[in-house]
Amino acid sequence: MRFHIVPAIVALGLGLALSGCARSEGSVQGSAPSASPATHLSAPAVDQRSPSHAGHGPAVSTAAMGQAAPGQIVPAAASGVALPAFSGTREETARFIEYFRDIPLTPEQERIKVQALTAIPAPCCAENPLATCCCPCNMAKAAWGLSAWLITQKGFGAEQVREATRAWLAVANPGGFSGDSCHSGGCARKISQNGCGGMNEAEVL
Image 1: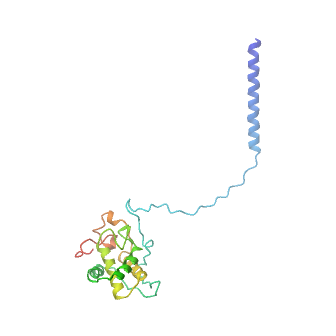
Image 2 (image 1 turned 90 degrees about the vertical axis):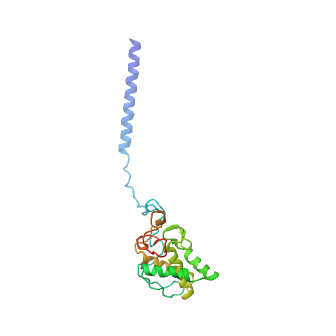
Image 3 (image 1 turned 120 degrees about the vertical axis):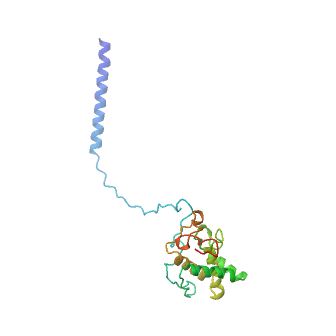
């Protein structure tokens, strides 16, 4: 009997000890002073939108390209010379393409054109500069022709040509460009509909 009673007594004592520890722990937790409410500082809002447009190239908004608002005539920053007023029509685009074909540039004038347009992402393929684009679509040729005319006929420098080209693009497509139309079937779309304006000079869209 002695051997059965002792383990029982030990077990009972251990149980009481554990119960006491639990009560002690609970009382300590209960008596702890309440923490003062945490002060939550709102983090600055972060734009989580993907830089891609419909899973293709990076989106290029009017603001990102630095384009003026539709119809707005902005003086060139460097000289204050007023930029031309643009209509954004198909006829205007066709005329700029003619300038591209008909106005030759000297090496220095070509340098000004390249300097001006290299700073603008191509609206139809933003991974390329407008100075080269990824192909000679009608929109690119119109931008090149407009630049040639501004340099040779108006005496514009690189900064003025850049601002004028941005202003024309903003008027030609007030909705802005996605920057990926070359990769999403936009080569045969109108410029005003986020397209390249076609590839055939005889059929400007």
